[in-house]
Structure formats: structure tokens, C-alpha cells
Length: 385
Image 1: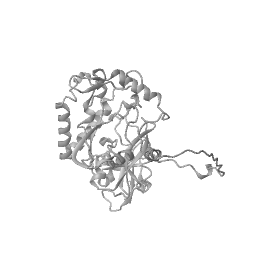
Image 2: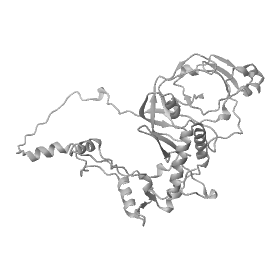
Image 3: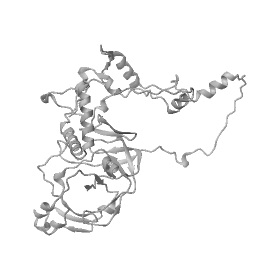
Image 4: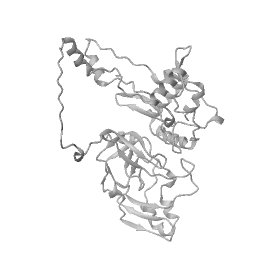
């Protein structure tokens, strides 16, 4: 099922739809602005050369570059049907022309950059403040038929606006480049030994942090919190607090938003049996190992949405992602946490060390992130439905 959305400047497709189409995808970063979040950088995939056609039409329309998302905000009660047309005398004659409601999720959202798909070919209007119908190359749709008694996703009803910009490295325009270059030459003589040459050659692959490497105040605060709060339990696991930027925040109750995400997940679980089994096995294992425990229903206030992803090189092994960046009322859990210093080894250094010996050894820590426990007083921030 598809939806056109005049308040989005970009076209989106569900990740599972892109996978089902076996479309060629390119990893990108998007800067996403919505009514609830001004700027959020998210990971996505760009899909090119997609085409779409109407339910009753054979005409194919090419779509602009399309970006994948794990879910598309939608409400099935807002989808016009033949019953919608039947309810209005000036639209009754269009009953057979409105596409039937499909038992599936909205998998494609066409933004206004897909103008060809949104171009009105015919409009049928009624009296003032009545809904109107418009025909595009994708078929007939009815605008203004929404039920004001139906709520969706948040306490303020539906209000979406999406502005997207792909994040790319900036290139300085040539007009700002200097037209003159001044060279300064300084002569210095020093005897070079073979050891000095080896040090120079190896310096390109050094991963040691130099004294000149900047360390932010947030990094220092993060290290201080970890040194003071981290402890080792009797079973060998390390326990640490959540690294909040300030004191423990009072987050809004996002249960409504989390339930909507859960409903989207439920539809996907019902549609894909393999996905359902892998998801259940992951969650059962999570609980059986003691990494999660049930919360009394009367205490449920904050919920973290989650979804499952597969690694392309590990088919059949699902990883459930808990979306701590999900915003509600312009805030998320991640907004209040310190990120800490970047301790990732550079790829160049890793590859060069692999060449130093005749045998390379690689190991992995099973369920690495779950080996670290969270202090009891911070666990309520990590509840999930």
C-alpha cells in the first residue's frame, strides 16, 4: 500500500519492502526534520529507479531517489474507501473507482518531490467544508474525510511535516580559495638513523592519542561518572549507571507512541513467520538470561520502541534494536546521555597489525552489550513494551 504526503519533501519506502523488491541500496545518512524534531541524523539506504502504478492503472510512474525507513507513520482509518465515497452525495458515483482497502502496511510514502505521481488530473468538489475527490495517475483519492474522533500516535492528533537533507561532506567553493600562495622555507640539519626512518614509517599507523588530541568537557564528565559509578558484581559482570548529562531527567510518558510502534511491529510479525520466530527466540533468550525482567503494569510509564534487523552477512540471526533515539514531545533518552570518547581502533591500524604475523586471531564477545548491567536506579529508563 502506498500513500502520498504533501508535507514531506522526500519519498520513503519501508526497509522490508525494499528488501522484498531486491532493490539496489546505498548506505547514506539523512538529516531529518519533523514537527517533533528539528534535526536528527539517521541512518538510511537510498534506492533508485523505483516505479509505481495505481491499483486500476497500468501506467508506470518513476519515483525520485527513495530512502528506507523502519516504519512509516500512518493511520488506516484515514484511508478513503468506497464507503467514504458512498457517504457523500457528490462522491457517490466514484464508489467503484476508489481502490479497495488492502490488508497490509503503508509501505511507500510519496513526498512532493514525486510531483508526477501527485499531479491532479480531475477534481470533484462539493459544498464548502465538504471533502473533495481528486484523480491522479495513481487513481482516485478523497481528501478531507478524516474522522476527528480517531486519535493516532500522540496526544495532539496527527500533524506531520518532514524535511530531509542527505548529509554529504562539504566542499569549499573555488571562489573562496586563495589566489596567491606564499611559501616559507626553513633549513634544518639532522642526522637520520635507520631507527628514525622506521619510526616515521610506523607513525602513520599509530593509534595512540597524542597530547594535542582535544578532549571535550563532556568526555571528561563521562569518564568521571564511569570511574565513580562502575562496579564489578559477584558474578563477574560490570554494573554502571547511565551517563546522564545532568541529573536524572523526568521524561514524558511516551506510552502512546510506543504502542503505535508496537502495533506496526505486530503487523510485521504476523506477516513474516520467520521474522516472528527469530524475534520471539531473541526475546525469550533475553528474559531467560536475566537481561530483562517483567515490569508491573501499573508502573509502566516510559517505553522504548524496538524492531529487529538482520545482518547481511549473518542470515537467520536477528538483532533487536532498542530505539533510544525515538523522540516524543521533542525529546528522547539519547538526548540526555553523554556519548563518551571514541575508542574505536582505526581500520588502517587493524589491517596493518594483521600483516605483522603469520597467523591472525579474531574473537567476539557473545551478547557484548548485555554483559554490562545497568544500576537498579537507572533501569526504569530502559523499559520496553
